[in-house]
Image 1 (tube, one colour):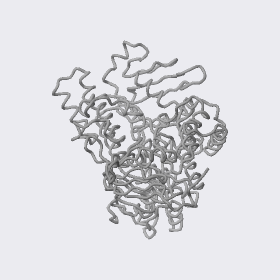
Image 2 (cartoon, rainbow, N blue to C red):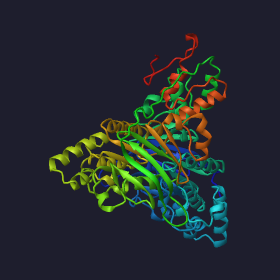
Image 3 (spheres, rainbow, N blue to C red):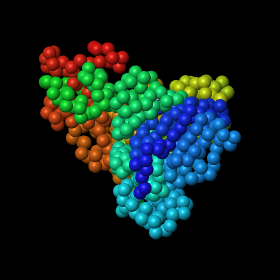
Image 4 (cartoon, helix red, strand yellow):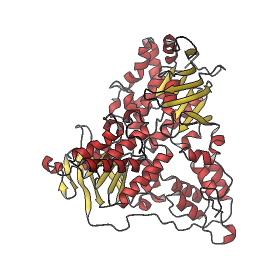
Length: 591
């Protein structure tokens, strides 16, 4: 692959760029930046900060309103010219720019993997012999050679994402933009994508990576943080994350090691290995007993049951194979599993949107087998799909949120009351007249959730509710779900986030369409299950994984701390006060 790594000329250069949408909202404001050949740049920011818009400008998919833009050696936009947009220059530049979307289904266009990878080069007019060489090379680069003849629609999310990356690379771009490529993937899938990006960087390919995962930003050469369309912070990962208070005020968070080192009063670091060594050298530390909330008072009253449920989309494979679970009224249940394990299929059955091939699903005592019985459940089950933008349709946020309550036949005043309350719960109050389609991806998710909450269901079922949300959004949604649960609403959610799963009362693990294990979080996530979870493409919550590493380094066992607070408590409970670690709260005060 031809690489511009030896050139000093920026691959992309933006000078005082401003871009506004038709609604008048400014997505980018006076942005200036240059991206050097071979550089790995990570872009962070809260939902709605302008990250995806910046990606579209850098990829040549959007032209701004003001400023100048140079892409792949072409002067594509200059607001001082009579005709600011040079369409021919944009056309030439796009041949050297690649984009990998958040959802690979939006990028895959054929039913054979190698044909999909060849699609881009064919459109560029690359000779057939060269296309074959490129396809083989890029499938090998992303470790998908064995799937060259496979149907991409039957692959896991992580595999699809790697096919999309191979297709972008086959066009031999000078720069490739990854727009949250791991937000919908499991632990194994995200790790695979990050390994691919590492290899690309080693090969001298220029990378712009947009993410909400702070740990991923540590791999970058440079980090750019956006706030309301402006560059708020810029520098190396360590330089950017050292601005602790500003990072938090921007709706983000520090990486795990930085947060833990600060809470323990140790020298601040983003490096987990460095922090582990400091703690291990710090003298005797006694493992304090950590208590994690499990299902405290199991109830005999099951609001939801799946009994020996099996389901197939075709004759070739089971999507679910004799899966069972029981959900107690008022509890919180997390369903985890690698991409393709059957989680979303199970949710559709629990919502009575599909019938199982065998087995039964019972909701509030009603078997969902018969259609007339399923109709009786209308309004009692709230379902938030994995891609909430597909649930949005109205011209305004308020109209969209009001759709469900209106269909329940409620009075106008009651509909308004429910909508107002739901929008306040999700933090969208004041945006009632905005178009839901002009909201950021994260806010679209919150809008979809508000529409479900306005129906005030007794059972709320969510498919990856925190995917695509920034750290502040994830924290806020967790608080929202907890407050809903405290009101007696039963919550079942599919998640790839082990920290979210650890906060549930009960965890169900699926693997290859079957039950793998289930129990309280402290039973599912422990040292003894780590290998089994890893084989299933999953991991442990970060705090427990770090505690296990400390034990491997020679420290006494710390129990099973599933949260940061539990880990800090375990580390600060030594037998003698002289060796006590100093704990620092979020405001930097010692306690």
